Amino acid sequence: MFIAIVTNHNQMAILVIILLIILNGYFSLAEIALVSVTDSEMSDENFKNNPKAAQVLKLIKNPDEFLSAVQVGITLLGLVEGIYGGNIVAKELEISLVEIGVSDFAAHVSSLIVGIGLITYLTIVFGELLPKSIALQIPVRISLAIAPSLSLFSKIIYPFIKLLTVSSRYLLSLLPIQSQGSKKYTEKDLRRVLSAAYKQGILEKQQLWLHQNVITFKNLTAKRIMKPARIVAAVPVIWDRQVLKEFIEKRPYSYFPVFTEHEDNITGIVSTKIFLLNDEQDWQKTTLEACSIPADMAARDIFSIFKEKRVDFGIVRDPAGRYLGIIAMQDIMEGIFGDIPELEEYSDYFYSKSEKVWIAEGFMHLQRIRNTLSLPWLRDYEGKYLSLAELITGETANVKDGDPLVLNRVSFRVIAGTNQDPEKVSITLP
Image (cartoon, rainbow, N blue to C red; front, side, top):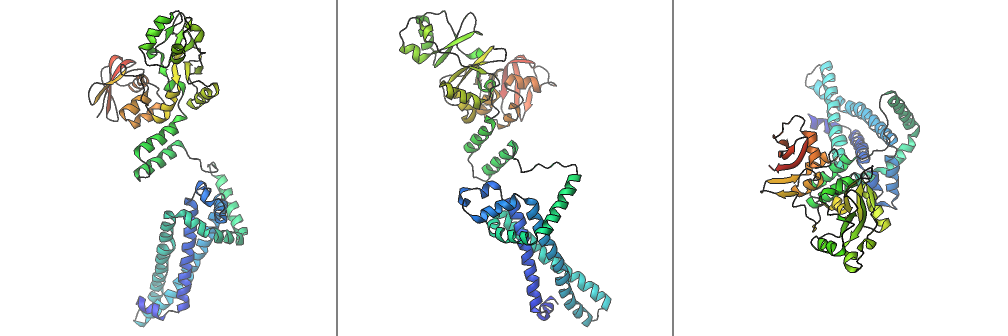
């Protein structure tokens, strides 16, 4: 029956219906492509002098206007397709139904339903779904292709678009929704994009890890990446040269904090290189000024200070001026690249007891534990807790002393101290 309809149908009418569906597909392409493409893609060096890219940028910076233009086009085409196309098919079908003995009323109703249904099906498949799928696959190419014609169409119906835009903005202002302006990407958005790139094979595991560390770097402070005072080898200012020389030769460090009276009173820094190259018996005259770093200073600001003062070592102090630890340029680099092989070992404070069991002092930073044991999920806790002790204390409110704290199938058990004052912790991997 459908073949008969097509055979008898005016060829011009069929061409008009096909043209309407193609135009519908054009507007669907435009809508999805422009919604999917980003400013950064159009601002790429490859499109620097491309006038079409400039038109795309102009369109996506005013989404209300181009969406109104697209909606006007789709709505008008939908009406014409339904009325014109549906009626054309319905008339031919109605004649055929009457000829085979169907009543006039039944033939009329049936033909309308089938006619409009057929046009709707063709429009949805070829005018909506297929074009939108194509636009999602290649949004940049589609955007560049349709930008000139859509810009022209927008100018032709500009008064109507303006009316629609003003109306929609007014109605939106009546709703309890605050406009966010241009889209702002959050840290979670960036991590999601990186994870997707890794799963698609665009990034290798090491590259993913490095990019994630770069994002986290802005949150790092001196207190988070410093070496705690309790594991730092500081020297008293009253030592004579020979005693200090023997002390330095037994330790693979480049700098040693110098204190007077007690270790909290750091007055300077002795450089191993300067000390060994200088035969001055009164070695105190060769000490360097201690560069004080506030505990809450951001790692990027510490980096700037080190560059400005041409130093690579600082003393971390709390707001009251108390000595908390030391920080070197290498500690800042580890904030991005992870643990860098060094002579300064943490083996006395963080070591493996077996393949699955590690022992860590409470003061060990979560970042070092995360990197050493490859526990990426620990990153979620680093914004709240600095050290392993803080993690145990904060997460064991409902855990009895002696019982393990289990996070992501990793068991943390305090083996020295209590849950509220953990000195040493056993970490058992799954």
